[in-house]
Image (cartoon, rainbow, N blue to C red; front, side):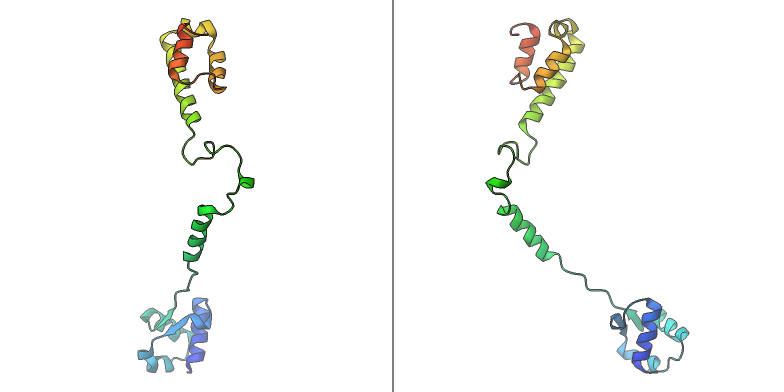
Length: 148
């Protein structure tokens, strides 16, 4: 049988296009003797007929474009929202500060509940959220009664 017909049969079996079928050139005689689909299946199992791997598109170009975008595309003043500090990739300092203050407030409530109760836990919590205290030291001072 002609190679075209064998390729056609193989493409139906392997469920792919005719151009993706590879026929072993060394097994040319065997391939010409094929008559049925069963013979083609046996050649596929032997490895004389194979399905070529599909060429996928390279991602190199898209990687380059991503890098370019990172460098300076679409980063003009019109695209910005918030200050430079707020847009930084690291965790904002405000968040770190607030979390540490809240942790300290909880700790102080367990250790000295009377001192925290004087001002009120909720009011202190809200003040922390509003950025009232610069840091933990100022929060501690407010709770102990040095400043109000």
